[in-house]
Length: 116
Length: 114
Picture 1 (tube, each protein chain N blue to C red):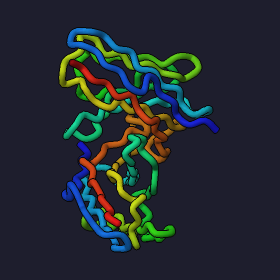
Picture 2 (picture 1 turned 45 degrees about the horizontal axis):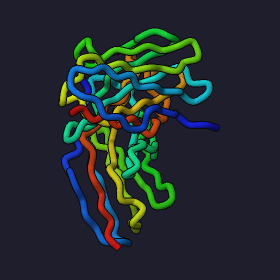
Picture 3 (picture 1 turned 30 degrees about the vertical axis):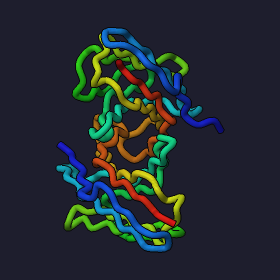
Picture 4 (picture 1 turned 90 degrees about the vertical axis):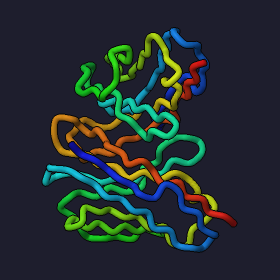
């Protein structure tokens, strides 16, 4: 069965600091997708990024970047120059290709607090 | 384009009562997923509906049930409410597919059971 672990429960930083969120996953599948979602206080989960298991190229999108390492089953996410609006709970999630459609298995989430 | 809409946004029930939560997916999405987010328990998968059929179910008792209508909207029903059912219930929709499609979430229905 698949599992996603986010060891950091809460991170507190001062504005403009970088924040790196750790995510480790377990799956028996060779084809899968990894996601990061953001949940602001309003409650709605907002999609941030998606990566498939065959694409280990790391990318930067604005202030967001991610580091996918299949060898260590990790999919870490970095916010550069954090802002107060980045304060939210961030979830890493895994989707396997198969009979479960696009069902996501989520990690426990990391609460990020950015102080001015 | 309208996003995923859920109703009601907040509701309070007492133990033993029944509740129905509603979800309208994004136009063109045929799959609807329900998740429970209870305090301290993260996001737990409840149900997946696609084209009117229940396709997958999480580890929840039978008093959690639902259905999907021909217009792809969905209802989640919870019978015999218990205190631990207090949670944010999130609905998500996606295109039909197997693993690659992004789930778009609604703002949720926050249920309090007294």
